[in-house]
Length: 206
Image (cartoon, rainbow, N blue to C red):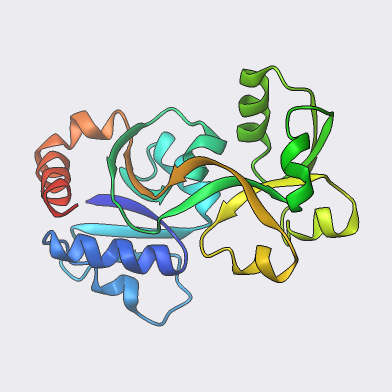
């Protein structure tokens, strides 16, 4: 049996649709159930529906042979696994955003940066030699500059509508983000007869 870790929600359904195109019996992912482990009717696959940030952990430890998750999560979690494919869906950007006036101050002052991507932000600013204070938040990141908690935010931007509604703008586009296929290092060897053909089918479709 091949085990697959999927991020709950829309990403899981888009992933399942792609897997179906590649011959995987993934219909169970679309079922209305609260089960967190879903087995395909043919008994060849099991799907784990988990939080996005947990997908790399399940794959790293070999509980899941493969997983599909956003590049932003992979950078933040930095787990020991193989990133196999850019799947080209769920595209967005990881950006620095804030009030327009902050554009001139991005490199000239000690910034307070609000983000849930603490590790990624720390590495980014360290690579630039910039002195910042990171404020870890887990929701409504845009509220930080509005209330004065932070000067800027470092977050995912898809449509920009929330930024615009709060008077904020993208100050810098840093990383292109999309869904990625990842694989456990051991599974890629021990289950190569199944995984490698599947990966090639997915590659052909993206």
